[in-house]
Image (cartoon, rainbow, N blue to C red; front, side, top):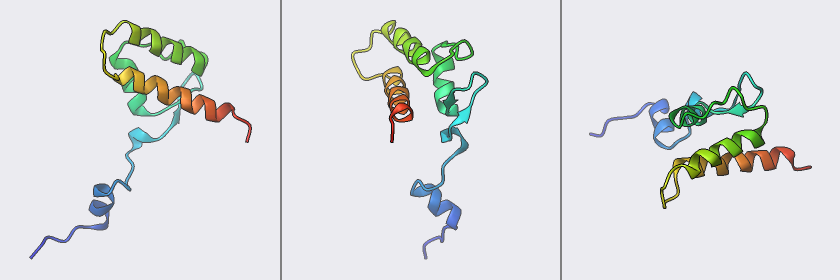
Length: 94
């Protein structure tokens, strides 16, 4: 007989249960970022607290990425694309 899973376990398995690290949170400087994005910035020693705009943050991420010599799509590439996409949708008139 198979083990029965609880609703919480099923939601987690199919990806319906979001963790808090995936939710946007306003940071001290007013930028909306997830905990995962902040941990990526910290891992690459990118100081978020001095950024006054999303443009400045994207610039810093791209500058840090230039210092890496990876030919593959890196974690910083992904983060820069993600931030640029959010900036685009926030500034686009609907």
